[in-house]
Length: 266
Image (tube, rainbow, N blue to C red; front, side):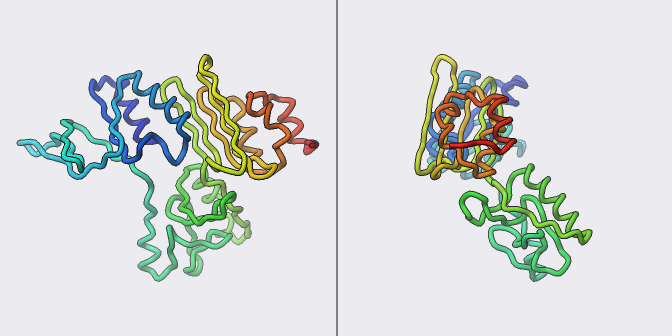
């Protein structure tokens, strides 16, 4: 997402030629499905941004004065440029803890109180490994919202107040690309997948259910009610009975009050 935001910002700043090189066959494969990704691509392409898919950068080529002159792709193509932005994933920096004898996996290993395997040493943010609330998978923590929560929990525990950090929801993304808003939370696939696309309104909703609970969703175009969908994913409350209303975006204040009061019945 950072790369696409940078591309759009540079275009808005007046750069004439912007090309995004994507290693995948489409945009945002980890955050969006084909339909939502196509909406983002259409919006950015309409603003003059070009895309090259299934390609990797092999080298940055200097000019006569030593400044950047082009980007070389693995297939031999050269893209003339004066500026290159590298935006590809997150790699936790766990070297300090590892060198001190601490345990690391996909990131720094911490317990439920965010304490590392080193006595009285705590860690939080992008550098640590967490267990995803929905999947149970061990993944790196790469969201600033999680870093904020973890920092508060780590500080509380360092003060001796003992506050366990609950398993987080690690797939939670929200962004605006031009006139297209997107929100993606939780799983992209599941036991039951419902989707609805309105071409006239340029609105797309995708709901992923695991049993009766909402396990993930994608909203693109109009994203009203995203907080309610997210609360349902986090809480694990039964939501299958509301699937038609949710798919149509009819999740207003009455539904929110019902949810918060705990009086939902099926």
